[in-house]
Length: 130
Length: 102
Length: 110
Image (tube, rainbow over all chains, first blue to last red; front, side):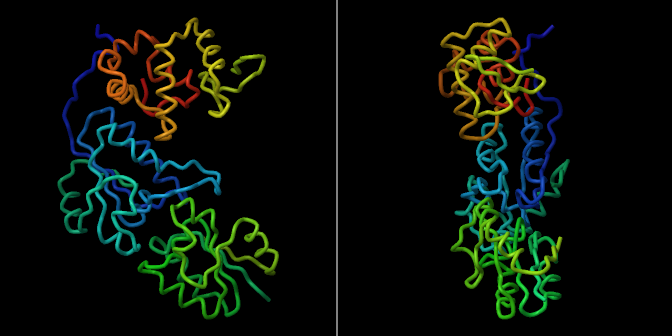
């Protein structure tokens, strides 16, 4: 019998990537992805999140949703570090097309080229797309 | 007969804005809402699309949707007017019909 | 089932979590604890207040593992461990403490 505070070690560790391609608020995808990542973080896998296409808008600084009556979930991206989700990749081309730069983002990320991100996707064992 | 067109999809993700602009006759008004507000921003790959529409159309963008997405009024293409929900209602009253491009 | 504190009745969900975070006050936390047969001392309050601050900053209730680590960082290793937190909140530190703090049930919680 194990006590509830005794932690079980992780089983097989797999490389999981959550691919985020949707803007926040207009659809539920961004929030759903974030919730799944937070829940799955308990399973101690090798988790990364990629932000490309309109997904880069999820990380835009200065979101203020008071006017639209929806919850502003952008502060939650800053909690990911505490959940040991530290690999956040942002596609450089997606930022550039939108006139954004790394300074516009609300968490520290690694900006990389589409080519490099494609390589990284190839290395994953599980890819979850939102 | 005046028409108000609303667009609620990001121009990066759907061709909704392109399609709307292709069908909106001169003099009709265009209002960008929800993810459509990304189409109103200066300095993006699609900024020219909307800038081109300003010659024939009055173009509006919904401020609360802009702010929710971390964008401010001064990031909007010059000539596009930022409106609040009251302005949205005024626009729908001012025009005979509303065509929502989804 | 609704919960009563100071003569006022507050809505909760079926598991007893407060429906509206803004309704929260310390008396309400004490009333919730009492309904569970618990009395809140300063050690409980320390965790409850910590959770409210965490929620304010990140807009989520932390998972128990994250809570434990964060408490350790702020209040030291003798409090930042599961055993201590389970003794304070035997129904599960994140779950029970979040309830008293007026937060929603934690995402992926124990």
